[in-house]
Amino acid sequence: MSGNYRLLVKNAQQVVLICSDGEKFITKHGMQNLCVIENGSVVIGRDGLIKAVGPAETIGAQYSGSSFDNVIDAAGMCVLPGLVDAHTHPVWAGDRVHEFAMKLAGATYMDVHRAGGGIHFTVEHTRAAGSSALLASLRGRLARMQRAGTTLVECKSGYGLELQTEIKMLEVIEEAGRALPINISSTYCGAHAVPKGKTVAEATEDILQVQLPRLKERMSAGTLSVDNIDVFCEEGVFDLRSTRSILQAGKDMGLNINFHGDELHPMNSAQLGAELGASAISHLEEVTDEGIAAMATARTAAVLLPTTAYILRLPQPRARDMLEAGVIVALGSDFNPNAYCCSMPIVMHLACVNMKMSMPEALAAATINAAYALRRSDTHGSLEVNKHGDLLVLNAARWEHLIYQLGGHQELIRYVVIKGNVVVDNDKTVDL
Ligand SMILES: N=CN[C@@H](CCC(=O)O)C(=O)O
Ligand SMILES: [Zn+2]
Image 1: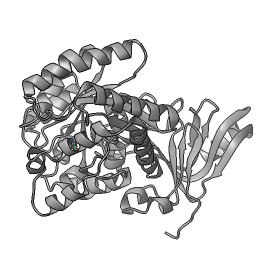
Image 2 (image 1 turned 180 degrees about the vertical axis):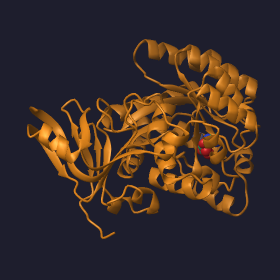
Image 3 (image 1 turned 45 degrees about the vertical axis):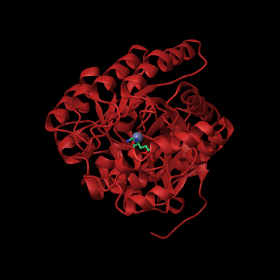
Image 4 (image 1 turned 135 degrees about the horizontal axis):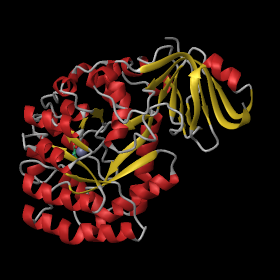
């Protein structure tokens, strides 16, 4: 074959495709048996899409007459799809390092929240911050995620809790998406907490009558693009009734339902999400058996967040029960001022050690299934022809090093590639 292509990654010891048959998600057996090619190559075209992936010898012969803008010789290295982070809160001002000390001393998440800290602390600082400061810190956080291998990330608003700041946050997310190579799925999370001085009913009314209608106008006018709607469905935050009305209103506007549920108390959020056709529900530390069954049937993804359970010393989500029931399990970093983690490799490591997932299950959860949770698995989450050429090249002969090695991404991840462009090049080699 002749022609000009953007990138050839050749002779990799392993190329982890994840799946190879156009699957939108994988469960059970599929998660345990990832599709891996030994000694493989990948070709990415000038449009940033994968043109070929297969045995190095076959690709070498097929593309012998072609030219490439860039060639990576990946001999002795591994190639994997870019990681997908299905849950983050990356736009905020004012860190909460002081609260970490309180929590280490025994305060619970809700103790801090009820005392006016937690989300309320961040809301105060984020309302006061200008867009350019928020954008600058967001860019730094996204760059850090990218260096740790994330190429598609969900980003929530939710530290405004009123129209003006929620819109400001969504605009900042959109601007970052325009300016940076990393792919973003944007989520309106105006129901992240009940603002100080308001009741749940008043907050719900404001979202339904003020915030969502304005969002709809902006989306219809093409001046703001948002993908998902989120609510923190929790005792002392938004109850099931208000959650239902907000999610339904978002769905009616064309947003994908992707919300926080069953985290600290069993709320029957999983059943509600299944009934409403939610794309995903996050947390689920307190999900019931009925909730698990409902999610499996509705094909609603469970986005598990190992950093949160770890930092807050919560019971671990029942990953094994969900996996065995056939739920589509995905992972997210939950990056936020409570859980300051930008690294999906660390998230996968915690998922394996604390939630008893296997390494193939964790990688599937951080790629194809996380892409499914964001309704992007037709374009992301696996190395298949016509998907985006987003991949990692590891300084290791086996892909499992990405999960086995705790921290130290700069040494392990040699390249991060988005749409065939090298966006991270850690010019280092290490002895393994
Ligand atoms: N649980 C609700 N929201 C976040 C925490 C946000 C915060 O504490 O600022 C979460 O997913 O963990
Ligand atoms: Zn969250």
